[in-house]
Amino acid sequence: QVQLVESGGGLVQAGDSLRLSCEDSGRSASTYAMGWFRQAPGKEREFVAGVNWSGTRISYADSVKGRFTISRGNAKNTVYLQMNSLKPEDTAVYYCAAMRGTAPLDHASEYDYWGQGTQITVST
Figure (cartoon, rainbow, N blue to C red):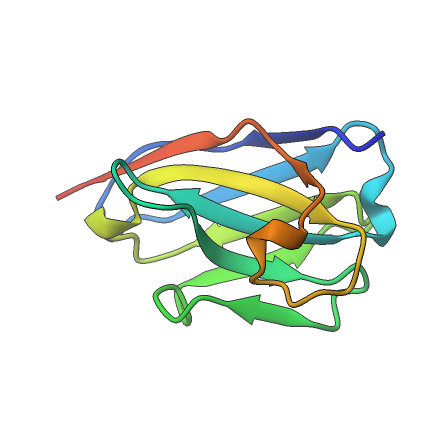
């Protein structure tokens, strides 16, 4: 059973860096694609970044390209999101998700498991 737990959120200032972690405590997601999504107040959930199980396919939203980096841990059941040069518009609840299949990484509907989310607030 995949059980995703995010950590690393918090309150930071614009320009700061933060690293989110997502661990599958059930240790079943090592062969799953994993992704990060976010939802700001009053907005729909949006794709941030995704990586396939082997790390050979990675995708980013245009809004975070060059600032965010997604990576998987050596055991493959953990995924990280390194966020640099944070902006106030990055403020949102960030969700980790896992996908069994091989659908495009930015398709939220294709993900099978979701974490509870972690809040990131970027102040000016």
